[in-house]
Image (tube, rainbow, N blue to C red; front, side, top):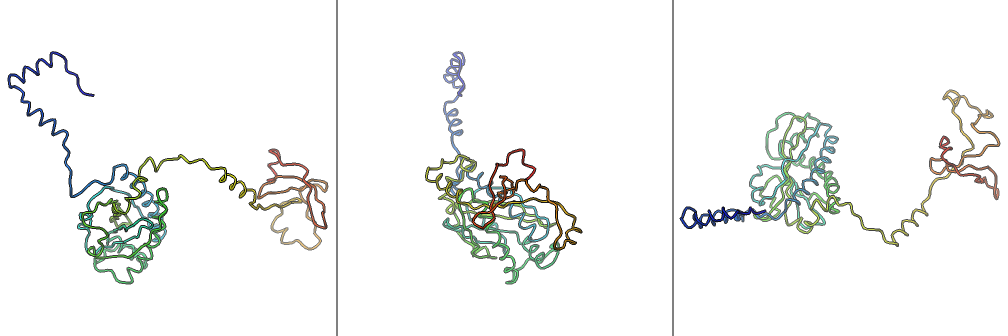
Length: 331
């Protein structure tokens, strides 16, 4: 709310302006400076902060699932956590990639385009060492990956694709596929240099080895679903009401569902030694009388009691009563 000047303050201001103590031009420049914001045309802000926050939530799930997967896959303690989520020009990211690198180019179907997952080479060497039986803690000479090494890590990365699908499930039904792995950043130009990207930077620790994991998502890839990348959409629990046809279909499916039904004449408890010594003709005493009701189970719970008989030369049970709360001990 703007500050309201008193009459005395207005008179003092007019007097100062008349005497030249206050310059009108200086006041105008100060006000204009407050309104002007610096805009970097080389780094246009195409993704809103709310959308970046949703990307952070999605990739918190990616980090958690990837951490669980790697811990079991490598039989080693793994920690993955998000450091930053921001937007840049693609050239800023690509120029910062070392050579050789470990770049996974992923087709983000059904969205148009590809994303990039960059993992520090020292981390990848540690993974390869563990996959080949080592402890993954020795310093490795940074060089070109061999075909055998790339084949090993490619198999691992293909198993990461379902993790991406699960993490994005609240926004879109993805079907990501690992297109290829590049070790030279010059051959991983998935978008023009001036294209805006969302860059998710994570730290990854495998045992005592620490590295970085970067996920580069071009604006062109997620442009069609930007309206879904909002915390309001993400946390929305509102569901549309089911139509009468949908309710009827659910009811018919439930009524036609088969459930196992069986009848127990009785039961008892025996020692294993007694069971092993049973022979033909032995009599086992059950926990019901001869004139007692048989228990009828639906699934694993007793639902009815009845008497045993025959019908059309087949065993049958005639339901006499429905099991209630007091009969729970028979379940």
